[in-house]
Image (cartoon, rainbow, N blue to C red; front, side, top):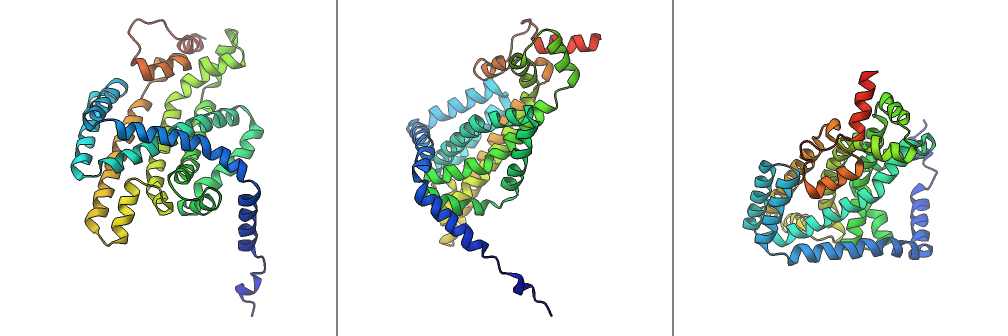
Length: 317
């Protein structure tokens, strides 16, 4: 009778092992180039978060969340920081926060342009979509093997793994947000004489911002989960606290790290959700949307944005 083990004639494991070893040996300059900006930015963020005194960080978090989200989110953020300090893992929490902030920046710089490109090109989406499917269905632990082989161990390889695992949701949501813009609104923008660049920046991206911010929310949560996993390859932070607690059978230490991770995740989740809850009609140009992150809400009585004018023209028709 035919046995399934008799069909195991393809040494895929050896092929993959030899391929990764070849890449690590012959493509090392490329990986050093990739590693350099990640290391620089991560080191800078980590030094800033650790240099800031505890009261200053609480005040900055409160004012930032109050300005960009709401008073409730600001109060919750301040309470989260105080509780984390009371748990005795403030330094580890700042390391994890710097890891997450660096990952968010790289995910936005890489993921949003790829999402825009795939939304404007069917051929690009045919290539990007299966790659995203593979990345999002691959278990998180699998990311650690090639990262260790190509980048080594430590905080920087852990950051590379976090960025790789957290980027797909942002690409998908960016693609979805631009594709969900109604065809009538696009036609109205073209009727007003907008070219492709103006159509993207003045019409499509402002309307897609809530969806993109929803993708950013998923990216943040994925990065939080991955920040625990990368402790297995030497990344510091709250994940390492949990891993050390499990390794020493210290349930209390592991629980402290887990509680701090949950609190940070809840704080970032509430913040990004509040940012995403904006009505498309209230958005200005994409540049104005970005400036809102620094200037706060648009004042009443401001000039009506081109997006709203295009929507009103569509309804009038």
